[in-house]
Amino acid sequence: MRTIRITGTGSALPGRIVTNKELEQMVETSDEWIRERTGIGERHVSVGETVVTLASEAARKALEQAGKRAEEIDLILVATCSPEQYLPCCACQVQAAVGAVNALAFDVNAACSGFLFALNTADAYLRTGLAENALVIGSEVLSKLVDWTDRGSCILFGDGVGAVVVKSTQDAPWYAHLGARGERDILWSGGMGSEERYLHMNGQEVFKFALETVPQAARTLLAKAGMEKEQVDWYVLHQANHRIVESVARRLKVPLSKCYENIERYGNTSAGTIPIALDEMAEQGLLKAGQWIMCLGFGSGMTWGGALFQWQDKEEK
Ligand code: UT7
Image (cartoon, rainbow, N blue to C red; front, side, top):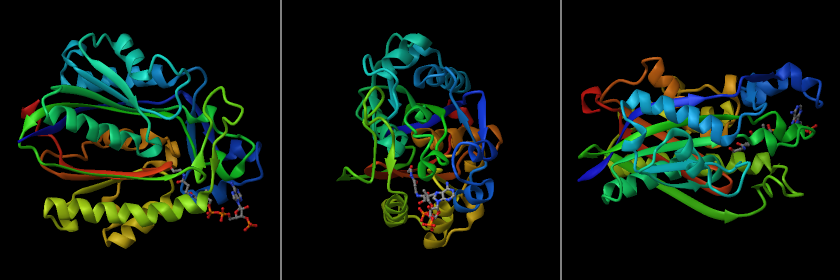
């Protein structure tokens, strides 16, 4: 059976870093509160970089890693909920920037679950032979939608992008699980240009939703694969709050050491968190051929989902 394999990763972050100390000057908060309640120490914030420029930079790195030329890519998916420009879609703009002239390209908006929805969309395209090589990117500049006077939300988010190149392959195990529950009022924004552009969030409801859906998604993936939780080498969760990662690990009874975390440095980059984590892990040599990786996410929509797969075999590139 045809499925997909990740053969390259890349990421890009804006140069400007905003520390918790800096936020203390903007809203009534403290470094101590933010670290204790979220695990976040700092975040990157765009000063001119856009969803498209950052996505293009991450895409180039992922292509180089995968040893693929842009012309070989026949599908580009950009997961984003913070595009600065509505038309053309970000994926088409990335296509133009990297020169992937043979690709079809479109955006996916499933908020913070967006990268996993896009990755599993790529799987569906590659599985059915509609494409062979895809670029899947999670790219967000949420700082433009954040109300920097709302301490309940502005401390959480950051800007950043991760990208992967995937190729169609034979018999590589790939298990997916996605879900959506239409609920308008928990986490929403009218989008760039709207009078209601600022992100509105009921933090506690999102927290509860994550603890309800993420462990269940993990169990579903394990059942689909016929695996035990101990067989998974890495759990790569959406980086929204360290306490959520901790609680999910506790519920699943998996050691926290198997859950990769980088929220301290980036905050919540929405669709960017999981591919940024994968890129860092690959870069640090943490991901070894044959290891089992489970990615899990949740976000506005409300949406949730996951993917369970084996890390690439270098020879297979
Ligand atoms: O990708 C999905 C995106 N969203 C999420 O994942 C959000 C998930 N939720 C969360 O991460 C947490 O709910 C938050 C970090 C947003 C908030 O943490 P919490 O532990 O749920 O705090 P809370 O809203 O229950 O507020 C506790 C107290 C309140 O004060 P009182 O009423 O107890 O006096 C808040 O006013 O903390 C206060 N507070 C703050 N204090 C200092 C809320 N935000 C802050 C702040 N600094 N930034």
